[in-house]
Image 1: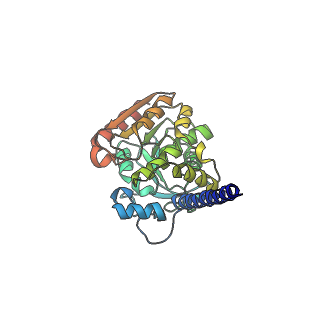
Image 2 (image 1 turned 180 degrees about the horizontal axis):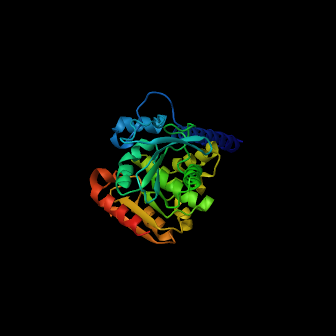
Image 3 (image 1 turned 90 degrees about the vertical axis):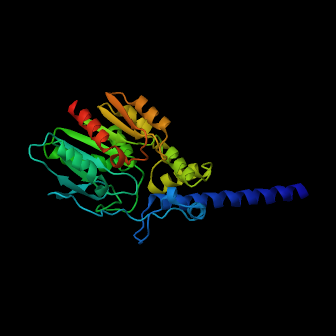
Length: 313
């Protein structure tokens, strides 16, 4: 009788712990994938002290809706694209353009963060289309799926350019944007002249683990639960979001760029993605660069690598 009571009490305790852990993970998953309109500063775990990191572990990240804090310094056109929600993009043209490069930003960013890259490409004679993903900048929505459903946003940009007669289309994606580009090639079989990928993560699970490591928190088991609930909340299977597998469908020339001091994406993830790319490919790494800050340290090298890649197509 006493053993039976002990087992029931233990079972109830374990059930309560299991439910609490999942509720905690669900809360974190919602905050990680949804933006707020509150006037708060985005949490940067790398700059937090011990107490700040503890607060993130308990209360989740502060995730304000990304906004465009500046506009192009030259003539541009604001265009509307249709994806899951209306998207806003900037079309910047140069006379006698050789083609068009569509640029896709990373997590917690907006299209204005891609302006420096656009200026380089414009200087090389290419039009640029800078796109706000769903939930960012001037686009509709307030959530992100870390590149999964954003593949449809990439397809919307492709459709716009192709529908306006552009034949030389290149796609450039940063981090989340790179993951979205790879998934778009898989899901929609689009065939750009080439793609430029900056620091794509290999799987959503690995990307989530990196977030926990950034605040010195153990990834297991919370990272897996956050991936699960993030998928449930946003209507997809989180463990199925694998850019490393999507790479197998990128049968176009690929320039893969990585910073060797990237604290968010491990070198092994880059090597695995590179190995899976079936078409012409080149890997360029920058020894002292972190996560997609290449132009601040390696502007000349980045410019040369991109120019050489596009010229070869």
